[in-house]
Length: 428
Ligand SMILES: *Cc1c(COP(=O)(O)O)cnc(C)c1O
Image 1 (cartoon, rainbow, N blue to C red):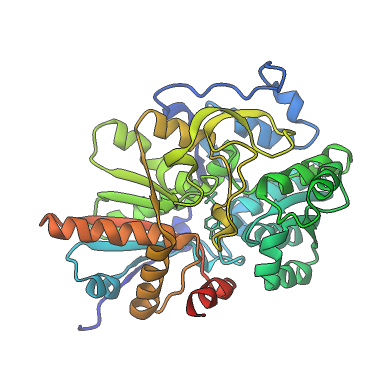
Image 2: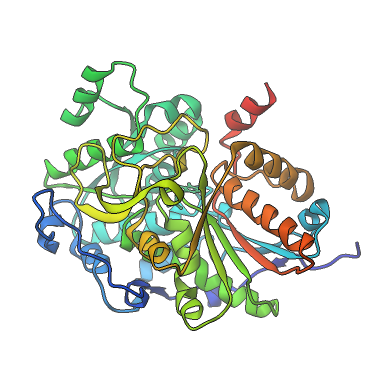
């Protein structure tokens, strides 16, 4: 192949200066969050653990939100991120479709989580908060938060799902290096953790339980707030820099997407990619937006749409979403970021009204196509991202057999360089 540009890179001046709120675009309004007693949650109910600015974003009906200057400055450390044409992957697959990936792995944490971590740390600091608690599954969110806490001068404590801590010890090293404290969940620090350990001293932990621990602690301390790396509306809002940049980059490449594909754990990288396109889809543009999950944790493809809590102890409000139920114990798959019983209310609403689709892929396909990406593009995807990659490859092959090549875009939500245990497990 002659040398040919494969990266579409936007100058710093093209960094989005606003976030795009998709809530006003939903075909049916989202039901309010509810208390376990069946009352709508009032914004003030959330004030014990979230700053007002984030509560306002959670329920906002405004489409456009300005990104504050200090957040823009933090985002500009690594944004805009490249959109990469994966020509060598196309060749390896033998397809004539164009495959692009949005490379969110170039952030300080190695994943898209830094986009919202910086914003959440800023708004908490602005509200006078000096300490944050959170949970982390695979460790990417904890890493992103630890870095963002450093950026804005906040102390962070991270409850990390025990099985992930054992699989990925180096994430803890990074978080500690950044000055954050990391505890395995279930822990002895909270009632929710102690109860889980009494029931099963060998509990592997779940994201739902780690959330309970972090929320319980934040609710009991006035200097401490809680931050969540996915699921909530304000998190998806912060991730819309992804989709806005993709739109500009595809325009530069003279492309319109036929497929927008992202993996789905709590819905933030998918929601961030797709939110700016929802109006286009509703106005008739033929774009298939597909959220991809593991067959072993199929909240969107096999879950039920109903009100459910975001955590296992039921401390969070009840939210309308596709869920497998809070007691669902996902197997210890390596894509820790996708081991979540529920989904985001925004993605759930989009799926329910058929604006988007959902699909589940097998672990075998994820590994197969991750290896193909490594051999062709020399990129090792995060196990989570390999779900988006696998579906993209399967769709490109399908389009090829149908003789209808197209333009497929997926989010490389993170790199897999700290997930080598997942790859090792396939080699042994
Ligand atoms: C957390 C994470 C995910 C899943 O979370 P979403 O909110 O669904 O995006 C996917 N990929 C990576 C790399 C992650 O860190």
